Length: 382
Image (cartoon, rainbow, N blue to C red; front, side, top):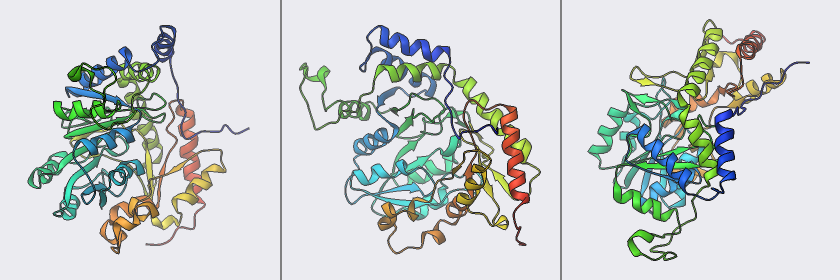
């Protein structure tokens, strides 16, 4: 019987088991001491003084937008090639997402496309560290400074990566992370907001806990402003903290996995794996392959082909501007012409199995299957 290879599988070790057991045994269930330890550890790792945990990375982005003052009528520039949660919160606050193209190598937003999208209504930009990679941050920050834009770094997929030695999550006016079950450091769910602005931090923390600021008012249940219930549990924090302590081990595995895929596929003409610029040390959170159009297969067809071999695949993200959710924001503009790189990458991009349980034999089977599928294609001449 052929072994089934899932796209993702979580492998938790002794550290995570003991940490979560301690949280339960000691009754540390609601947000408290363990969550504070996680916030401190993340702050130290990033070199960013203020961190507050939230229920998800999407919530962290929403709170970031609110604290940066985004509202109806404002525009926020977002890369066209990213997970939908990088743009949805923009709509939640009534602002309009405007979609920028990405780089052909890093697959992250380019400074050139960002600059072309700026208008008098542009107030902020959400820059995504896509798939464990990072953009040309120097060029992007130059554009943002010249146009007085708030910079929100969506580092949900970037934890552990660096740009010129500086860690993902330390570039934005405010930055955010996710600890979703598929992330490099996971807690099943959860997120964090990071900033070096004390006022922004205090408001974000207050908004995440019903608008309550007991320290300034001295009143236990007194709400200063309309807030939300975005606290998370110590059990989640215990898992994330245990994983954060072994992040180098997790990154080493992801880099080994990328190298193993690359080694098996490098001789195949017309297959491009995700890469990084010269100044970036990526984590390769997810290894992704782009098929040349000569093979005549869409990403959905490729995923279906692999399913026949008991290998689970995922398609690369769809351009946000192509979705009904955001098509109104794009208006009458032909976004495929305006963001050609994002559309080209998305059309034939697949995310290879990336679970933490894969070994050399599993990767070899995926690579061999890839070659077999390609050999069966009716290759089109260029």
